[in-house]
Amino acid sequence: MTSTSPEQSPLVALRDVNKTFGDIVAVEGITANIERCTSTALIGGNGAGKTTLLRLLAGVYRPTTGTAQFADGDLTQHRRRIGVMTESTGLHLRLTAWENIRFHARLFGIQDERSRQRSEALAVQLGLGGALDRRTEGFSRGMRQKTALIRALVHEPELLLLDEPTAGLDITSARAVRALIEALVDEGRGVVWSTHDLRAARVCERVMVVHNARLVADGRVNDLLEEHNTQSLEALYLELTSEATPEFQAGMEVGL
Image 1 (spheres, rainbow, N blue to C red):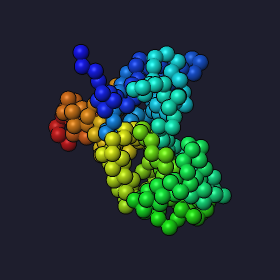
Image 2: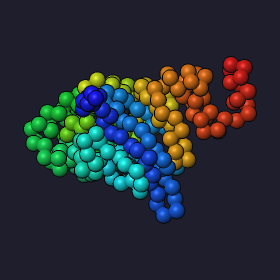
Image 3: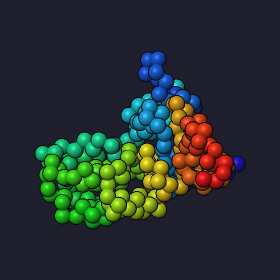
């Protein structure tokens, strides 16, 4: 029997994962792999379970039942290998962008010289060059998001978890973020991108649709569109979640 190499095995494996909070079921029966070299869009409505799933992937939560593991160990024991960018950036506004990033890097044992070099390179890619030494309280929302993204990447994680990374960004900045994510995927990292923006999600190779705590679709975008005979992620989402109105369904039938 041929063994599976680390490059061939999934980066993260979820197996029949359930997460409950008292009587509330936040995630139910989710089995999925997060692959290397792949960008995955995680989509779903408010309260669908996306945030809980991200926290499980980040090792912040343990499953109530089931397993959530890196290929070689428990997620909660390998947080250094994970980078997280939350929608609320959590920056210390009295600190400069660099000071926010440096604090995070030091928690991971990264030397200041190395983290500064990494930060400057990422800042140039994201159009934040020249702003690293400014206090973040004067930053626009987009600048804060870019700072938070650099902070999530400074320790060079294998898995990057993003919550609405392009929300509020102008066209140029959103394009820069997408280009950086594509470069990270090309380097062999796995990226999971939670978003309500289905147009942004379309740039990902794979989509996971979460609805009412369950994973209702998981696959490559083009394969899912073909399988469900839909032309867009919006139409696919509406079909999978049974939220299409009669007018919408009638329009789909006549090709509107």
